[in-house]
Image 1 (cartoon, rainbow, N blue to C red):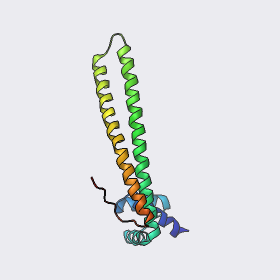
Image 2: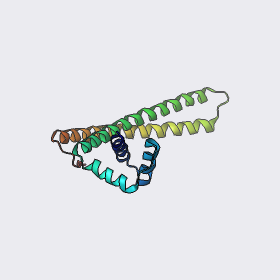
Image 3: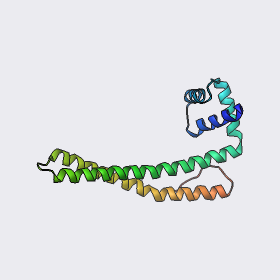
Image 4: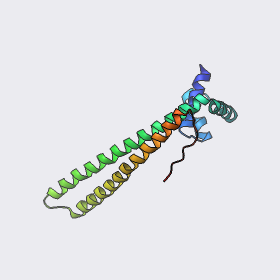
Length: 148
């Protein structure tokens, strides 16, 4: 049971790309006891040598990246909508605060630009996903080359 838990903790450290120091602290917090750097590195090498673990890490990372991209789009969209709402409130006020209106306009422009860039990235991510899936069908976990 302890070995299984430790393997899962090491997988977490690999997935989140923790440094050795961060990984040892993470394991100590989650497991309740320390392990040596040598023990961590041996276990990490063992986990990475297992082909099924590499496939799992590969899929987890791919799905996590797409999920984060979608969350970023939703967050920026909410920020832009809130700024637009605040802008309308400021425009309708009497007297108007021109400085606040100017700053809100700049914010709306910047968040719209960022949202456009993220949305333009969506087709690129879809292409990457398709290539990853086609490589996955070949049972390969090699690095995918994306042509520009």
